[in-house]
Length: 151
Image (cartoon, rainbow, N blue to C red; front, side):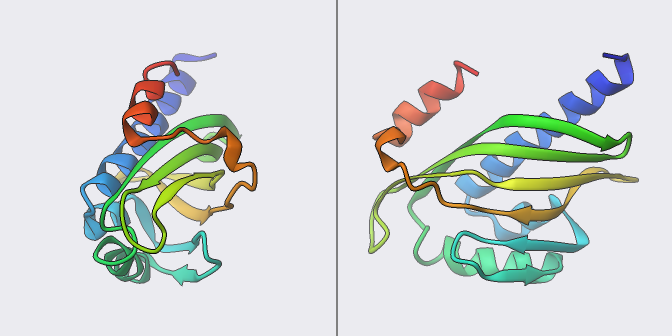
């Protein structure tokens, strides 16, 4: 791996960490800042959010509603460069929702396409898929955070 590819991988890993931090802070604008202005995001319920503004508004709604007491941990499962400035990333995510009608622990496998912009790497496409095998999920956010240190 070249030094440039190593830096790109580290930068993308930083974006994924930033994504979890913004989610856990329930900061819709901070979360949306990870996306390009013209990004597309298909979220876990199938809603298609078009553009950074729509992504911010959609996440503001869930951060103050159904996921207001949630904690997420995401780890890179696979990172592949499609071109030097385009990357495909598959994540392994665990979401712990403490209260409300969605209370529980969920496992998902988001797919992202990131592009290198003047501002650094940003997400231009995001698609989230809920995993059916809930038996593999971690029981608590504390366990999920502890598991993060293993990767």
